[in-house]
Image (cartoon, rainbow, N blue to C red; front, side, top):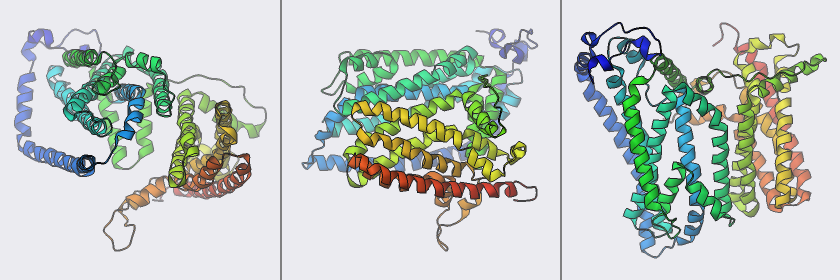
Length: 570
């Protein structure tokens, strides 16, 4: 292909129909890249040292945290320790669990393509270099393959973990286990990078990605639920076969099962399909890198830089909002509700309307409520600290579900001037923002309890509604935390010590759930173990008391926010 065929004016790369303003004689791609290599040569050695040091630290951490313990387990197995009693559970969980993990990897890669993508060069490259008469493919190609390398590294780590697990619990040969696990652990991340590039460069693919994300999320959750049921002794083998052959996410599970006693026929075919599909995807992606819109590259570079800056300054909400705005593509659901006739209903009308216009939040709340209910099942049959830990995990999922419904309250605290329309004091206004999330959470919890009762949940199923008020109050405490307290990061937890203040910052940032979840887990775990209606009144009393304390705490935090927002205050 000649330079005249590959060269394109920036306007054409953006989809414009204007004729090219520069020809092959004006193409300075090779010269520009050679000049950049020469200018960057003095800094290349320092960059290589930084990369080598980071790689050394990563490998050292992996060896100390995973390699040495794994070696110790194999030594114990050689001296008579038996880990094979975990094998049946692992083999039962693997078909649906591998499908869930594989689909989740592809979904995350596609979602990444909606706001960032695998090809995001620095802003200097997009703003200056690509605006000149250079071919985009040679400039963008290294960034694509860097993304492939970064995606492949976790896959290798997962394959090593699968090798250890299969070797200990199923007594599979380590080389065979590693080879078969690598088939899916390497190919799926690379396929995800290719899918992310397709979504990044094609607006139609991006629209389909946004449309199919809720359904893919439901499938991931369904696969994970089926995996948990299989471990509990309720497998559905014919459905597992369909899932395993339904796509690349299942082919990885077939390959991982190939060296085990639970092998599914066609393991070599599944591995070959994965390898061929990945190779074709990489080849096609490599050839189409240059078709990414320059305008889109500039937008993505600015978004990525903004998210990175927010993370560096510990503005986690700002980073999340930037990612959400870029991923949604400006979509807004237009829903109308009749305006209330009584003024005191206006706030609740606004909160309800705001949630209805963001159905993704309602969907996430429903999806996160499912693992919260599922975690209560093993908590019912466990004892001691394990029951408390599983109950705390269930409460954490419940808190995350209810936190999705508290977005109107968080928006109110982003800029307290928005509350100027309200006749209530700011603290009272924030407490009223908890009404709609609490009502929706109670509806969701009652529906979940009604679904669990026919499955033998008993009176313990009604513990779910009792947990809603304190978890909503904990979310309101977090919503009223105000500006990020970065000064806590530089404070030592103990005077005179050399430690950092990261635990202090985490305690401040997650103060609400950090108090509510452990405290509420104690009575709930005891009530789950009892499984009788006699434990409900005591749990309800503790829940009400904890709710009152957390609401008072949220009120005190909210009352201080207007003063913090006044000009001249740091």
